[in-house]
Image (tube, rainbow, N blue to C red; front, side, top):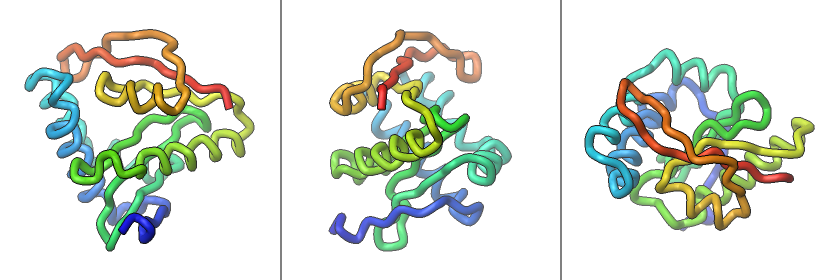
Length: 157
């Protein structure tokens, strides 16, 4: 099944599927670590269409596709900052995130950086820990006037 997984750069036509995946993943996966109020504030970021369009147009933004369905995506900002890594709720634990992460780490190295950084959720921390990321610090961030905890993590490449 996953041998048919393909990676490609995102296009604006992918926007509805990307934002739906973003929203659904937060609501279904991250809800185990965040309150309903936090989840809804965070998931509402899917509605910021212009911001998503800008990301797709200007960042290194990849989608993972299986049978013409986007099952994951990831994007880099500033050459070495992993700004997003999401996998469809029905495809968690199937190595899609690991493959996307490996591609992003390679891209960071190709961009001439020796370190990759990211802000990761409580939910994602064990995944990043299993990929040898170190916690720089725990932080509180405000999303639509709701406070969420997450972590700044990094890995030397």
